[in-house]
Length: 385
View 1 (cartoon, rainbow, N blue to C red):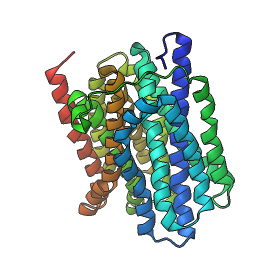
View 2: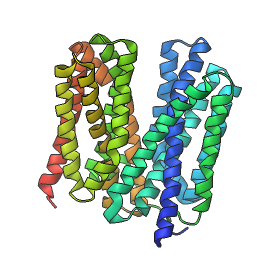
View 3: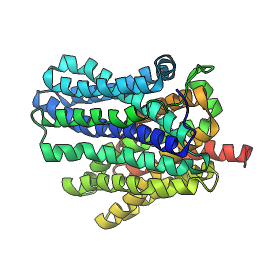
View 4: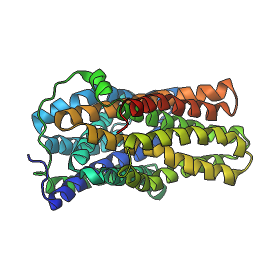
């Protein structure tokens, strides 16, 4: 398989990679609420539901490091197509096998397929993106991912959460992702065998980019999980508290492309430094506007948009720093640390709110952003250009 050389080839390759990440967004946006509601109807406790959901992060951490080696052996497109097909079948299997004991290994397999799609679509999009437009392409990529997250809940709103309809609709969208992948089957990059070295190697080669994924995972999961609770603690009703999450998600969608364009014009590390400082400032301002729903929602909208760009710009910086097998391995490390952040964010942010109720929620988020300032500033200090 050859890397794209003509502009039309680049477009075809990027379309296939973006289709794969759309599948990831739909899979996560649909499965997380749908399976939680289904388990509740099955009589599962909140603890069991939480443990089953946590299997998703565990699956990514355990299996993602092996994806580049497997793709080198099987081929990028073949592995992506297999992951899409298996993921779609897993969605239907959840409904066909309504037994909690089976849902744990099934969740593990399903989440592994999403991890494969995440790693290889990021590798492919980074490889195909024109260097001078990498930020813009990553912005489009992240926007589609965010829209995929939104499509999942929208399906549940339209089709309901009972019966086979949401599972079959989700599986159908999965299989639809095979079409652009098939059209680009000869455009995927050749993936040889890199030097290996594990996570420590990529932390050394591209520390800022990889740590950006961990920060974004922690902030995203922490904010989305605890923000509704914070809303309730400051006196909002459940609907208004949930609207705060929607405001953050909308900002995440709308900020990706403009900041991606900015990252094509100045040092991407400077963009990440600015985002982390503004993220810390926005978090610090949350308590001061907490008595106004409109003011709080507006701040959360901007803050959520700025936070979301860390993933986009970090991914673009990764693609500009590494190529070939090293890029594939670094993308695996990127996704793995993102999932580590997903697992650590909610307890850290929730713990902050418990230690200093209710505004400890905001202070904990601010500290996470400030922790990232140190490695970014150090990188800029060592290598200004």
